[in-house]
Amino acid sequence: MSRRPRDRQAECRALKAAAGRLLNGTPLHSKTGRLTVSELVREAGVRRDIAYGDHKDLLEEFQARVRAQNHIPTMAQKLTQQVTDLKTKLADTTVALAAERTTTAALRKLVAELDLELHAAREGSAPVPIAHLPARRRRPAPGP
Image (cartoon, rainbow, N blue to C red; front, side):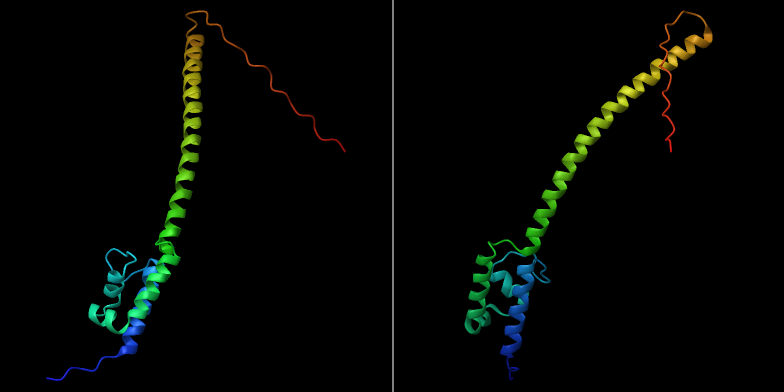
C-alpha cells in the first residue's frame, strides 16, 4: 500500500484560513469557536501531529494573534457592543413605558369620573358639581 503524498501548501492554506475564521468569530467546523490551538487544528481539518510537526510556526503565529486580540474574537467584540447598546435602549424604553403607564392610568381615572358626572347629569338625580372648562383661546390670524 502506498500513501498518497502530503500537500504541505494545502495544509498551510487550511491552517491560515482556519485561523482567520476563528479570529473573525465565524468558524465552520469548530463547535466552541474558542481561540485555542486545538480548535485551530480541528477547524483546519489537519492532523495534530502534522500541525505540531510541520506547521509549528503557523500555530505560534495564531497564538500571537490571539494574544494581540485580547482573546476576544472580532465577532464577539461586535456582539458585546450590540448587547450593550440594546441594554441601554431597553432601559430607555422601560422608563418611557413606565411614564406612559402613569399617564394612561390618570387618563382612565379621569374618563371614569367624567362618565359618572355625565351619567348623573343626564339622569338629573343628584346635583353634581360639574367643573366647567375655560373657553378655548383662539390664536389671532397672522397679519400681513
